[in-house]
Image 1 (cartoon, helix red, strand yellow):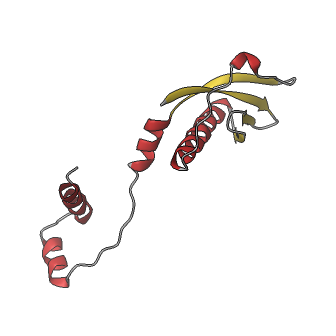
Image 2 (cartoon, helix red, strand yellow; image 1 turned 30 degrees about the horizontal axis):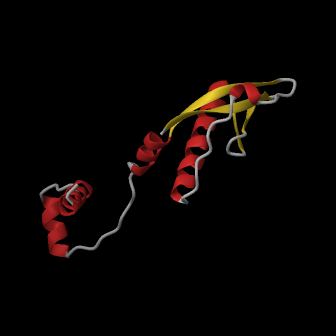
Image 3 (cartoon, helix red, strand yellow; image 1 turned 45 degrees about the horizontal axis):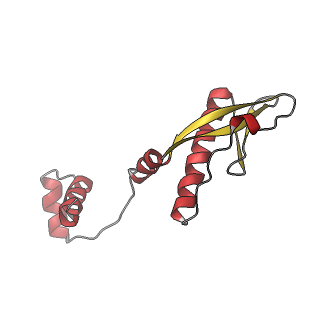
Length: 128
């Protein structure tokens, strides 16, 4: 699900602090680009966390209704919860497994990639 959420930016001495009112969270970045990336990451992470808990992701607030203090500005941050989840789900996870010594020796001699072989076997076994 793609959405855009308002984020309030406040510049401090060496960084930007970002408040995301719809999620009641804050983050920061060393410069504006970093702050925007951090805000996008925070929104996406909170959104998929709420999905996993069965909670409803809030609808974005109207940008025009955001109250700002002096020195602040507000902009919209785009996010895609499905894409973010997919990027996290594709990260590598280390697994230990045990095989007979003779099989290990033969596989190493044949230059078998254990990780690739295990992935292929699991995909075939699960019908993915």
